[in-house]
Length: 580
Ligand SMILES: Nc1ncnc2c1ncn2[C@@H]1O[C@H](COP(=O)(O)OP(=O)(O)OP(=O)(O)O)[C@@H](O)[C@H]1O
Ligand SMILES: [Mg+2]
Image (tube, rainbow, N blue to C red; front, side, top):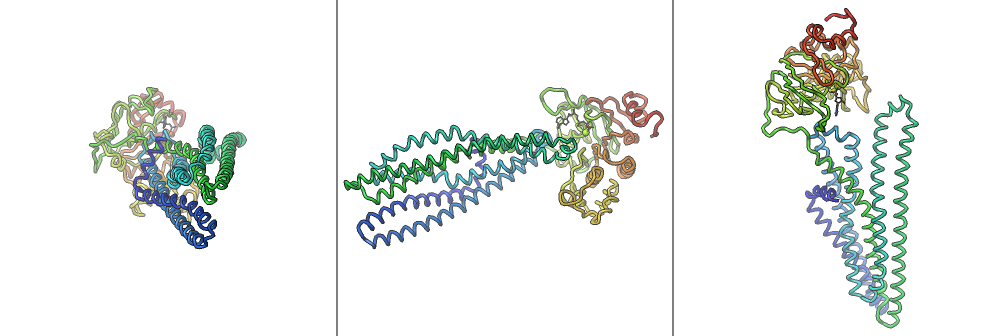
């Protein structure tokens, strides 16, 4: 509940609209309360007295009030909609912008599927309750209190008849809140789980097919689907009991009013018009009870959603600029690791990197070699501060990366992540993602170095070819080459390629390397590679083993000093294989 209250702070820009909507709503209630009174007048002063004049004028008044009420009601809805949709859009934007501030570590905690649910169905839940609230929250108590007040004024005796219905109503509402409300929450939880299964399956459907696991996945989905079905069925069954009973109570109340009222009419203590008005007011008191009970379920669903939304909004970006962060206009590109130790979790488990120390001089080519899981990606992720070292320092030109403004730091670095990710759009836009203002010549130049120009030109639309959902499907190696071109285009002083040619054939890979070498004479580059052929020409090779640097040096040095390096070399090229 408190999280639901906290998200309502996004209503604050709409204070004026909320106030106007509330005023209109108050007027609607007044009109609503006035109409039964007019019915009473028509019957008692008009029909009973055979005074056509009263009947006519009061009827006209009633028509007027009805029209006015309709207009007020529309006005209320228009303002409520404006508020709730505006609230929704603002909140959506806030969540999106918050996610943009996330560090890699935050993204490890909340995966894509979870974030997507929060931006869609959770948001809708909260928006719905706001919009309902603006139309119902004030209306229900006002109607309830107003109707009772007027009934007391008209005829206190008859009110006691209605009061006898209250305990039963109270019991019903308690039952509803006790048993049905948790079901709403459960339905929401099961829906979440179903969404998760669904999301996993849709993104992994190719794997499911490749491993012939359709039967298993069908069963898993069936189970989640059944569970959702059962709870939502139960919820609807319970609510279906609730409505008819309340309706029955209202009808019983009507009968009681007519019966006791009738007796009173006989002895002249009340009028037929009053009885008519009473039966109307009875509906005005019971209806809000019904609505509020219904909302109780919605509220618990919405507050669960609000908590999930607040979890995103409350998340603190793990990595932030220090207040005294500096900007560097130009850098030389000297990268030094000083006894760096790093782990993804601060839970004191085994660190992923231990005591890493090395120096990369400006313009040097550093190759990282090591088994899968040895920490290569983790190491290079520390340079652009995707994560922060726990112990030791990473410096660029002598400045600790933690002292440099993050956006400034990353502008000097060209990065091609291990997984090549492209956006929907043209090939050209993808390549110049980091420099949207780059000229077409620069784009072509980068593509040529990355050995992507040739295959791009085989498409009829060349660089304007759309990629992604509505465009061509690229092969893994083609995507990787576009990712390299994208990293090169920013003309970085530090270039990091994380296994960026793993899906590219050996020949093309060699061509990329040759082209890079010409271009990169004053760029410090870090190349993660699986193939030893890639590292042979490196100025410095770091051999990683289980998060530690097992050996460093150039090829010749390592062949002499590092048995692990020799082993890798032999396994790939064999004794007396290709020479450096
Ligand atoms: N985001 C993460 N959260 C927690 N642990 C991680 C994360 N990424 C990697 N690890 C762990 O850190 C260790 C090193 O992983 P890393 O990705 O650095 O290896 P790698 O040498 O790049 O392997 P590969 O050659 O397969 O890319 C592994 O044990 C891995 O399980
Ligand atoms: Mg890796």
